Image (tube, rainbow, N blue to C red; front, side):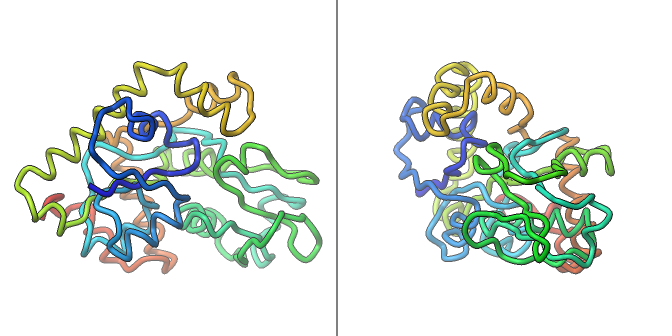
Length: 267
């Protein structure tokens, strides 16, 4: 099984058991940022992987969602933040530098702030008159940007507007991989559940490794992990449907994308 994992620390409570080998598995683990995993999935080079939730709309013909697993936030997510010299209400019509590493965060900004001019972020963000704001994700967002007078957590903005969790990523499995073996789907769920349960029962080990990777203090990492959810429960499912609905309304995905959440997972 070729299994993708996010290279950012945000998925570590679920994925570190796989990366470290603590949740014993014969999987080939392939790490990458969200955009990298999106590309590998689109190329058919992963059997199971987390993927930007918005990108699932483009790959549902080849991949099925694995029930029960996601990367979500029921409030401030801390690692998807907009750093700006201007108040949010003054950004429509203005250019915003946006990381190319995450399709969902890019789409979420366009849903929450209609009319922003999204431009690819190249190099280090510089908040200038020509580009007064930058959207960062992952470990980079946790560190912040100098010169920002306003900092907006997109997870917090989403929950304030909808009352629902924001689902940033879902886990998917290749339909061809699932079709190759009657037991493949159960195997995928068992592998992910084993790793998640290991992470939940070994929080200090996960935090220690996250500190090593980022240089951030343990208290900061613990606070960050406490803001994340990894189980695709009923509230998260409703949040995902609402995100799809709003993304379709502004033309980011076809309206048929809403039907993807109702497809049989192992079809």
